[in-house]
Image (tube, rainbow, N blue to C red):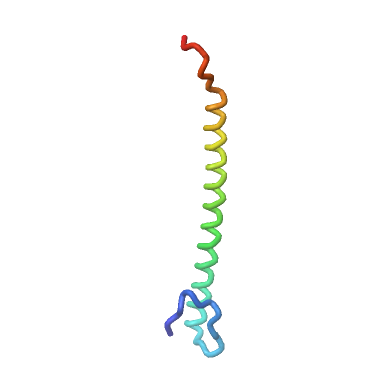
Length: 69
C-alpha cells in the first residue's frame, strides 16, 4: 500500500499490521522532525539575539572622537 506523505488523515480501518506499523513510524518520524526543526529555530533565534546584542554593544563602546594611543 502506498502512503501519501502529505495526507495524514488516511483511513486506517482496513490496513494490515505492517501498513499500520509503517504509518505509525511515518507519523513518529514527521513529529520528531517537527520537534527538531523547532529546537533548531529556537537555538538560531537565541544566537541571532546574542550576536546582534554584541554588535550593538561594540558600536556603542566605540568612540569615534577618542584619540588612538
